[in-house]
Image (tube, rainbow, N blue to C red; front, side, top):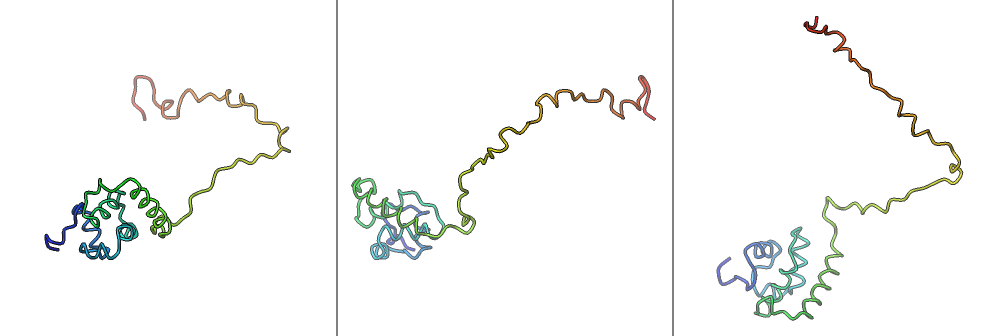
Length: 142
């Protein structure tokens, strides 16, 4: 790609993403539109921020991305969220999110006796281990 094909507002990483999705020039970008180009980048598995969306719109309008009016930004974001929601999930994340955890209690067990919490209080570890008992005080083992 030559210097004449450089798009306003788009850095090297964004240009690489666009090239990989078939957008190589301003004409290509105008043809597909900012929203479609952004969705192509997302569909390709990249994770661009919304700044790329604004930058693409700015490139088409030949203005700095920060000059995009707030109303237009909100419109673009809404459309992008709707379009991205329709994309298939990446291969490693196709399992649905786990549902809420629930606790089931049986009312018939309400009167059931629970073990006495003090039942484990009487445990005392052995004083000597088998290794210590085989060593005579002041001498070697064996």
